[in-house]
Image (cartoon, rainbow, N blue to C red):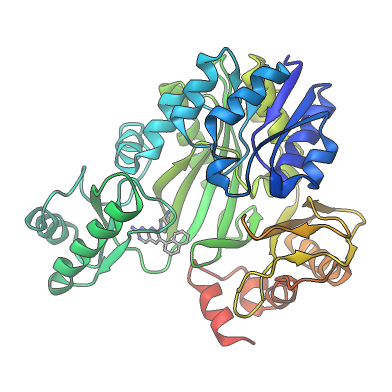
Length: 447
Ligand code: MV4
């Protein structure tokens, strides 16, 4: 096992990783920008190193600074968390070249899944169902027209280097295709390193359901069920839950087995998430995330397994702690992402926390780096806390969520707590009858 792990991140996820390290008896190194000198992740780590000025480019994305910090502190592994350098294949390779273990997949697997066309091709080869579309890049409008005619409209043009929705354009008929194709290529080129695009059948009312997997270096691959992440606004997830209200145990077991067999074939290692669209009873793979995800706690609450602990153990060469037949999905969990934003306009609201009280009690978990007196810097992501609630049934979970949201006090800044209280009461959320478009309409209605 490692003796010292450097945590290349900040905020709640740096605390989360610090906790897992402590419980494994591993010493920790925090890195921080000058804006984060007073941050909780710095206070709780055994050691800390300042890696640069406030802009992430110069600190949390500064590879030479982070590698230097690992070398001078004698860290034997680096956990990247999510965001920042977590899906940077070159960073993962450089870490390994310096004799330090990257707690995550191999650089080759990160690179492959970062290319959405390559990821889809791999999925097809592994028997994982994908959205009908082009076999590869669509290099001109004539090719786009040909694919669109064969799969039928509406179609969606996506950037190969994308993800998160940037550069996506819908065409409902042939007349819209030219404009959509040009716009998608332009946005792809402007936002990503390449203007390569591909084409898919557009699904009008899907849910976003993702499978959590763990794979070790001994050939074991298990899945921990799914998360339903359909409650999003402009590609920002607000609420996630596990299990999905839309799936039954047979569907879960069938797709779970397919993805595990597939990842075993390619020798995937560490944690990963396969994203699917789910519409009218069918699953369609769209992307794979080769990192720990923000919403991993809902899976942990239901499965009773510490995913970060497993990541660290796997990276050190140990097998996964449990086998597939020991995975028990118990009860229901819901996570609310609380951001420092106005709950109606979503304008960022950084500033000082004047009052802070967290909810507690059975089945309530708060993952946050906030404390009373903390000043939220304006340079980084606006997510300041995750409230995760577990119950034996979805209804118990919902009742507990409402009371936990009522207990939570974050004073001095605006947060999305009031919006979460409304969502937790909304009949369509309570019924579980929502798709990826429901929340945007609900927020627009301002009920
Ligand atoms: C789609 C889709 C409909 N049809 N693909 C958006 C982000 C990117 N990762 C995939 N996305 C979508 N791909 C086809 N063929 C609709 C979306 C989509 C979406 C997906 C998941 C969660 C929220 C979303 C919000 C808008 C659009």
